[in-house]
Length: 119
Image 1 (cartoon, one colour):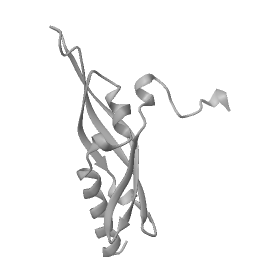
Image 2 (image 1 turned 90 degrees about the horizontal axis):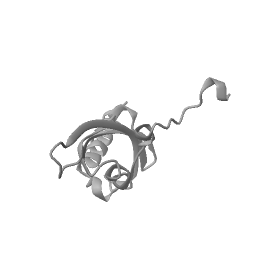
Image 3 (image 1 turned 180 degrees about the vertical axis):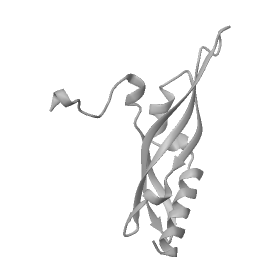
Image 4 (image 1 turned 90 degrees about the vertical axis):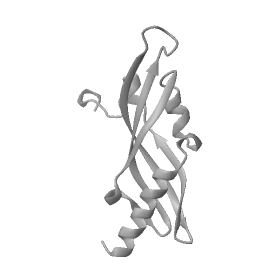
């Protein structure tokens, strides 16, 4: 990996971290998980960011705090993490994040994988 690619990846990571998560496609899925969902951290994987010309994409992990019953005497708080993706493009070498997604199927007990008996 050359220095230019490393620098571009670092700029993408910074853009993902700076993105207002409430303006993403993922937020409605995350917000539906609890009466009060808070994004704690979004982890990106710099070495897994892929470029196709000026377009880029990569995986991420959403770390969230889910709160239930906040107006009760016995509220519950739990932490969860969910995989997701992002993609965007470089506009004059500035990363613009077009989409950030999340897969919350594990929260509902669903899996995207097939069981061996299904094959």
